[in-house]
Length: 265
Image (cartoon, rainbow, N blue to C red; front, side):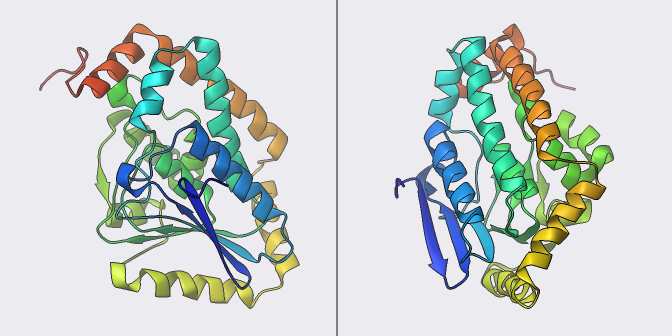
């Protein structure tokens, strides 16, 4: 594992996975995506692990896509973009369907794919200063790959708003719409996470796993279905990335200017 990208700390039966790019607000590229996917898959199969905590180093949880990664993908073919999107989809799917309970320790703000990571976790607890947004439409794109999990978390009605507007909202709003379960002061974050861990460790580990599988089954979601959805969404985001609007949106973002399609009221 590349310690520059990711750290895994074992605390008895708990595995704490930390996105470790604080200078880039824990933005991810293809390397971090691959490392995180492998780490979650391995921990999910580790019989000594009872729960997994996902958090970020530094002041942010995750800013979503890394600018250098976006620059490379903006210049790539539609096929390359589809393969890239399928890698991100595999990460989200691996986290969502991890057989162990997962807790997002939201230590700071999260945007785009960072919101996707939170949505994939079973429990999410956020600091009160965190901000959130699904910013893709500002780039001429959509939150395609993460959409199934965000819809699961905040519901169809809220997604109709935030998928389109790309508005920034605060931690209390995130709690109101279901993105996070609890909002606490920064100094109370670890204690809040520990309370959830304590509850999980008092339950039977087999029963906990079956309870998670039960929720997916009753909701009509399964891994095979999710893989098909992911392929469709990867094709969608690849098509949008190479479109004229997507290219303009990405170029404007990288050049730190307003895109041509942005208008004032």
